[in-house]
Length: 229
Length: 253
Ligand code: HEM
Ligand code: SF4
Ligand code: FES
Image (cartoon, each protein chain N blue to C red):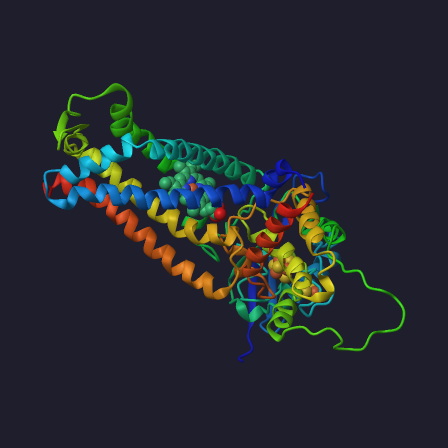
């Protein structure tokens, strides 16, 4: 079997979703860890240093390319999977099966993913594009221990003064949570974990991970809006 | 259990042939005993239709005891009706009460085209089996029983997977019309046993390739298949097939 045959087969396509999804799951831990520095209560110094490290280290910049490839692969394959799967039943049922046997979020991965994609666009526009390309008047410069860096903390504070932005971010975190509660365990099934001991472990860790990560991300804009940091 | 009689309204999908557009037809059915099976209830209606010179409702059935997998009916939004781990033929009318309306549809999937009314063409499953759902054994004298040691839990898991009757409810229930539960049961039942090991890799590759060719969708682990499977086939088998397929694909030439 050629590589191309493997990755265009139904299981191969799912393998692409699972591997890129697991990669994104690891990325989210790093992302949440760095952002959690805003709660250090030091006026953003620790966070700015961490953000500067991420933006200025060669290895991480190379990993960033991998991250973008992973995200786009996941999104493109995700949409293709969704539409191809939908086309497999030209004539539907008069009485839908609904929740008899499956959870709504497991059937709504395409929708939840689309909400995440829309959120990514907003999120990139808020932070990644100003930091990398076009700058922003609230993205001031500062110097810590003789090192010049962006004051990303300031840009964050500014962005999250707007109520609709905070609501949009929190909404996206809900979508992320549901996407992951199904996606986390689904990805392990897709790569072939069938031992019930590990399936149970994965299921529990997945729920814990999904809730903690989504809650952590959601609390960031909320903390800033409410002036906790 | 208390015996009672009931009157019902059936909304049944009628379609003359594969090319007909088809549509729902309503039928009142009277004096149905709670001890009848669901198919006997349809038999009663069909007798009436024949008496009135009308075309009886075509539906698949054979054993009527839950072992052949023929009786494909999607009843009130669920394949094989409301009971857990049950086939349509083993569904009894005590599941319903007087005055109920029951909607009956055929399995819906491009890979299972309707032939007539509630009868769909499930030969796609046969072609998947032909692609790899077999083992090769030498003919000649019968070998001694138990000559090949098999671990108890593997034998049990293989036996549980072998319980699949190929009914297609998993496909009917799946939002992606995926046949992976069926294929994973068939692959697991042979892959877990020493007799299945010579063709283990080609079996996983060929059966999945045939499944894709037949036009079934890709599994997204929603679990709807497992919930409706009359034989309680676990989606753990799907994870096992995923591993079987991926490893076979990685090492194949
Ligand atoms: C940080 C963001 C994301 C993470 C961590 C993530 C994670 C995952 C994981 C772990 C899976 C399960 C893979 C499997 O079942 O084998 C998955 C599936 C999927 N994702 Fe995402 N995803 C993200 C963003 C997106 C986006 C933006 C889309 C946009 C279309 C999307 C669409 C899908 C679809 C359609 C599936 C397949 C459904 C399924 O297999 O159950 N995801 N995702
Ligand atoms: S796996 Fe279950 S639902 Fe699917 S064909 Fe076999 S017996 Fe029927
Ligand atoms: S008629 Fe054989 S399983 Fe129902």
